[in-house]
Length: 396
Image 1: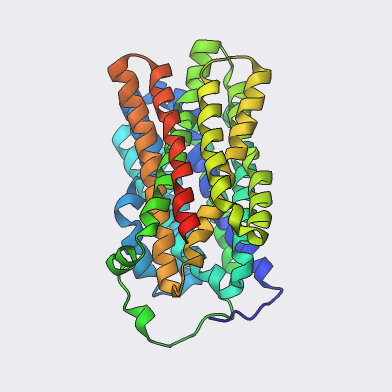
Image 2 (image 1 turned 180 degrees about the horizontal axis):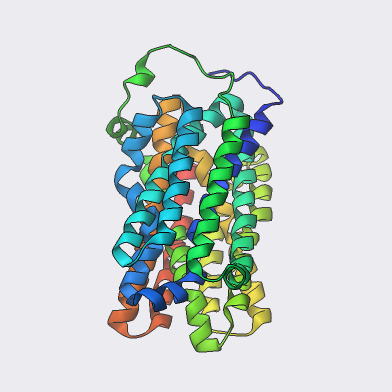
């Protein structure tokens, strides 16, 4: 499909990016808010782990079917409505009286937000030529990295300023509603869409796509390993650093946020470099897996702020693999628009699986082994799965 290049594509991309970024604070701030939540609601380590993965739990079960279903509808309205419902459910989280309602609201909020992923895929295909896709992925991931760092750095101060975790969640929900209004005002479908046409693309099923594109299963390992490690550390490391190294949450939040801040320039460079030298992508994936694993292990061994600064920032550069993996479905040979949406949602689903398995497994291991250090060290090894994706990318 040929895409008519329009300057307005960057306005539409900016608006859809603003919507996508509003999921970030709701997810990554939990590690900072968790001590207060746990104290008020009396949560066990396993319950804390489930809460850490709840935002991504629903996508494991509905991500791929949702991509198949919502890719039939108007992408602009799917993006707007899913964003609005997710924001409202974030406000419901702030009102939750106990663990189960909070867990349910968080999971439903994640499902609502995940429905906009296939819509963004279709919109990117409508607005951008294939040569610019990896660059847009790099820009988006870089923005995610900056917002994640700001969330980690500012949430402790915000927590003190607004008076508790419930008010912080209220504020995040309000931000989501504002982003929805911005998208409805500025967002539109692109010129690359073939309105009203029916064809084989409309009959493709998720099972068919995943059966024909078995290489996706290898790439999916990276989406389990990277997020599994990061979400486990994001959920438990701030509390771990407080208990073992006596680092205040303000400092540990700032330091761990560097894992996201480092991702910003790394993603921009990877997006630019990979679009020009695609033969280097497998080597980049191998390096990223090693960097993520080693930096995570190092974070368990020292409380020195200078060393932690270097380790966290280095771990952030390990996330340079994301633009390569997220642009992979767009570059599958002869893939149609719906196939790309389904493949992208499949990779997001496996990423969600890693995001759930990571903190839940860390909480269970810490309870079973009686040692949070060993539990997080085991999860750090998960990051090596990122390197496995190099075989799939090299083959393609």
